Structure formats: structure tokens, C-alpha cells
Length: 164
Image (cartoon, rainbow, N blue to C red; front, side):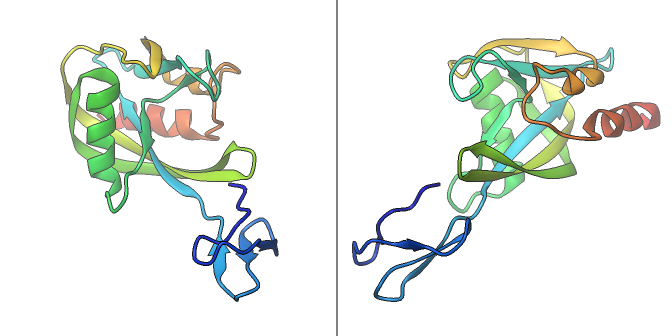
């Protein structure tokens, strides 16, 4: 994020790097990534649930359902909360299968923690963040309309399918 003024003393900050800012009173601030969760939910046909974004950023593009971790919230709790909020479903028996760093907005990075839900219940219904929820093959992650890029994730999902 673009940080301009010190939140402790309101003095103008100096940008030392993309990650570090300092004010004249020697307060240091870090532009650190925000923690996010993205959840892989598989149906009985081996298809993944994808969300078509209803708002910016990336409106009209596809993503895995999920979102930002809240203050002091662990990723598994965030995954369960976000799935209920975004799809109306419940998930359980969660496993972290990957993590990726990326730029969400200019000068704002995220750490996406990818979680596989081994169990889920309910029928997916899009909320206000999603224009649509669609079941598609894992390879759709590599489609140009999918954002962000998760290199190798479709292979990890296919490997999970071959084990089960």
C-alpha cells in the first residue's frame, strides 16, 4: 500500500524501499503482504468451484473463493468463514496445499494460502462478491480469465484427485 504519513506522529514518511518507510521521528513502518486464503472445493466429478468476481479489482475474472484473513484470525478459520460468506457452504477437514505471493493492487502485496477442503456441505450460492459460482476442471486455473496466477496449482489438485 502507499503509506504517506506516520500513524504515530503524522509526520511525512520517507520511502526507503518497497517494504520500508520511516518518519523524521524514527518510526519505521513496513509494507507487508496481507494474508489471504483461497479454497479448493472439489465435487464428485473432480471439478473445482470457481468464483467469477462481481467487483473490482479483477471484475469479471475468475478466482478461487476465499478472501482476507481478519485481525488475529488463523487461515483455517478464515477459510471456513469466507466460504460460508461467499458461497453459503460449510467446509471441513482442511489442508494447506500451497502458498503464493502476488500483487493484489499496485504497491499492495498478498500472501495467498491455498487450502483444500476435503469435505463440504451445501449448494453453492453466489453472494455480492461473486457474479457466479461455477464447477470447472482443475486446468481452468491456467486459463487467461483466471486471476491471480498460481503456477503448478492445477497439477497439485490433479495429484490430490489421483490419491483419493
